[in-house]
Length: 232
Image (cartoon, rainbow, N blue to C red; front, top):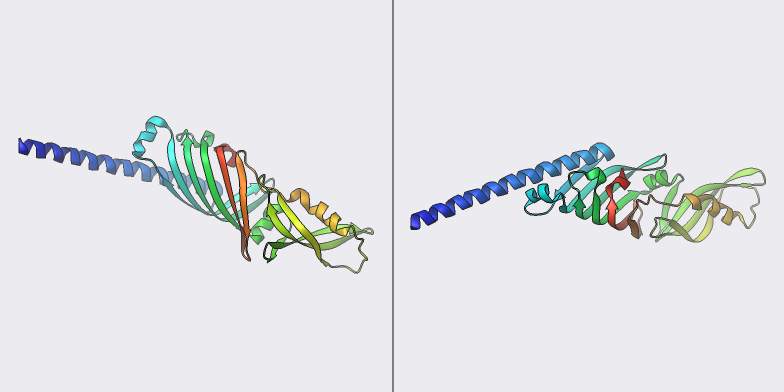
C-alpha cells in the first residue's frame, strides 16, 4: 500500500513538473513573439513579461491577467512628425482578446515614458530646451513690421490630462533683432506655438504627471479600457 501511494505521488509530481515546464515554454514563446512584434512595428528594443498562472489557461479565456513591458528607443508619430522615445515602462492588466491583440482592449494601463529635449522638439515641430527648475525655452518667430523676427520664449512647463502642454508665467528671453518690438510680441509668440503644444492622446489615456530635467522630460499616463488599435 505504501509503495502504491509513493508511486502515485511520484506520478503526480512528474505530471506537475511537466505541466509547469510546458506552461513556462508557452509563456516564454508568447513573450518573445510579442517583443519581436513590438520591435518590428516601433523599432528599438522590447522586453515583455506576461503574468497569470497557469498561463495555458489563456487559450480558454483569451484574457491575459497582466503584463509588464520595458521598451527602449521606440518610435512614435504625431501627424507627419516621428520621434524616438528614450524609454517606456508599461503595466497592463486585463488584456483581451489576447489572441487578437490588434483589436484587444486593456482594462487598466499605467505607463511612464522619458523623452529627451531634442526628440520632444522633433515631436512638437519647434525647438524646446531645458532652462532650470520647471522652466523651458521655446524657439519660434513672429512677423513684425513686415519682417520675420526670431523669438525665444521662456516659461514654466505644465501638462494637462488631455496632453496639452501649458506655458505658464511666460517671458521674452531673447529677441534676436534690432527691429523695435511692440509690447504685444509676447502674445504673438505664444499664439504662434500654442496650437502645436499637444502630445499624442490615444483614446482612453489620461496624462497624470510631468517631471523635467536637464536631459529629458518624464511623463506618466494612465487609462482604462484602452483599445490597442489606438497605438497602431
